[in-house]
Length: 319
Image 1: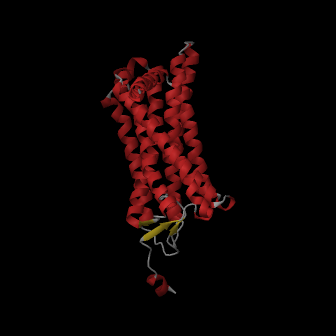
Image 2: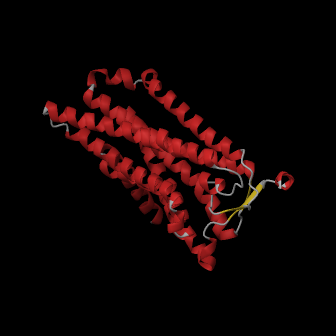
Image 3: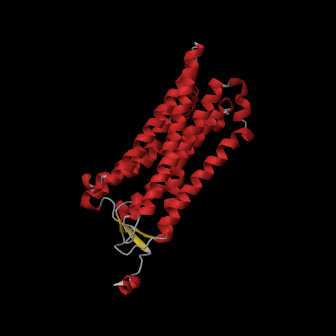
């Protein structure tokens, strides 16, 4: 039997089969995804433009919000074109090297979402609990002390996930039950043991997403306790904190739901599991700029002015 195993070749090209069980209805999946894609591009582009163009928004908190918008916009750009080509034009092939490259970018950018929420929590902590040293910690040299180690952690963990996936032998079949190269969707095609891959994937979830969540939660608990002890009505600061908490809760819920969907996949239809695993990467990019735009007063006012300034131009053009 050993010689036979040695002669089995590993697949180097794969085919995406996402939503194939829907048959002729598969093309209709493109409609909601395309609408959300356009909403994400417009909302995040507008948010980035407002923060860059308004000097009053050139503070650490708003710059971090603009960075979050950049991350939220890049994920749909990585996901949706590939998905639309799949469901509309049946272009479903991808090489192993391209698959691993796509996996790296999708998951690395995904880790930056929770990392940015962690940095936002630090910003609020220094602004509310240690205001006298806020500019020292949130200046570029001071802030890099928090940025660089976390980015290195994300890079190392995602590289481990991708490199380990690249060492597997894919001799079972070459059909990926997804529209993108998601880690577990590729790993489940391997014919050997994938225990290490599952373990490293689990470690990545806990060392990145769960660790960031615990740090964020601790930061906000300290913030609320500090405000309550001081007796100061810092309504504006707390309002901003609640906005970050809403975004964090939505993101974490989607990530954990997608993670658990692969662990209980026998209880979920394939299309449902695929939809959840796409939404956890895609939905934050649609809703985060809307949440920040509605709940952050300064951003909301500048967005209203920007949009209202465009309306007279359209009226003149029509006349």
